Length: 230
View (cartoon, rainbow, N blue to C red):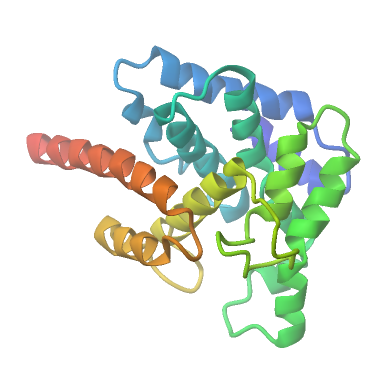
């Protein structure tokens, strides 16, 4: 993950993103899914780094690949979905750290800055040669909600991309399961309740069911491992 860390630090310093490096990281994840006897083992939490933004991005990538693989998606589209997940939050790297890491309640002006990161990220990726257009779309749409009531605002007949909908689910799951500055991590049962409650409004209900089936099997395996080792 050192390569990914270096790439994100480069973006923060306004250097051009290394798309080839991102592609290589995604390929490693896809190969892990393809070569492992039980693909769920590839969902082991990626916690080698403390900084939330790029740890979160790698987790969302793995979770998106799990969703897409379960639906039979392969080849270039699977790879592009992985890259899109890795880059979905790139716009946050342009938010001042004092706003992004603030533990107190955000002001309206600070929320306005936060809500700009999908547009900022999409514009940034548009100017990078080699970035799949799916990554640009996902960066723009990942906070849009299934009912289109999120941000940025769009026309009522907007068709949100499937990759954006998968990313919204993975994003929500990992955000809740990860310890943050302002709260602890949430148990799987709590996250499952949140996801089901958001199905049909914030999240695509069919994709939520697909995702929860994957994660329930994964958590069952983890529980059995813990019982066997105790």
